[in-house]
Amino acid sequence: MRISSLRLQLLAWVVLPLAALVTVNLWTSQRNALATANLVTDRMLVGSARAIAEQVAMADGVLDATIPPAAIEMFDTGDRDSVYYRVETANGRLLTGYPDLPEASQRGSIEASYRDHPLRLATLSHAVIGAGMDSPIKVTVGVTLAGHDAMVKRLWLSAFAQQLALWRLPACSCCSVYAAASRR
Image (cartoon, rainbow, N blue to C red; front, side, top):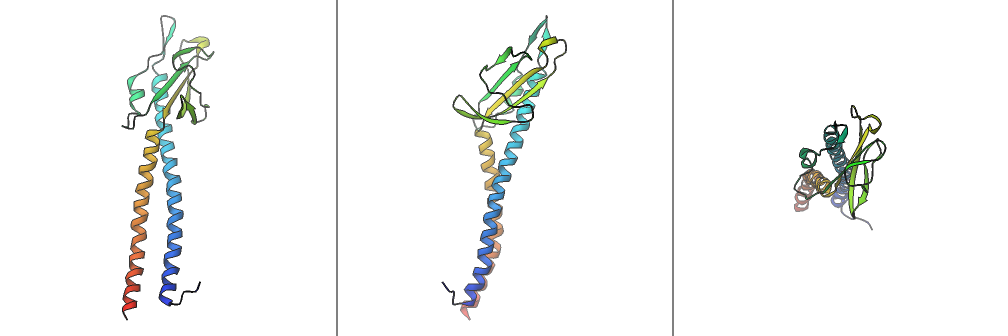
């Protein structure tokens, strides 16, 4: 296919590379949105696990694990996420929570399926003074991905709107130049 008009060739040389650049930028923006949502969710998971772990204490020779409401409420984003947790001793005795909740590695979070829902999970090891052989405890917190996915969508749509605004400027300029040149 040969473009006969020099103006159309110039327009194609400007618009097609620009469209390719916008496509790459949108793909990169989506990846960045996902990485940001993962980071925010992971920090919330670790913060929740730390808040739970700090409430575990020895009371009359027995480990007592109380779940502070703030540890669960930090996931209240309005997206109806469910939060699951498990607190166990070093020898595997369950103190509170869901006994069949998967455990994340100590190095970071994981995504797993629990009760037919995808979850993001984090596990924290925490020493309890006076707990003896039961220390350190392991606290695992998991949250469903509704809020995470909504955050990815909002971040990506924001980046898309910015890219669209940037793309419109040169495209409109090219179109107005082409229209002005066509009138001559």
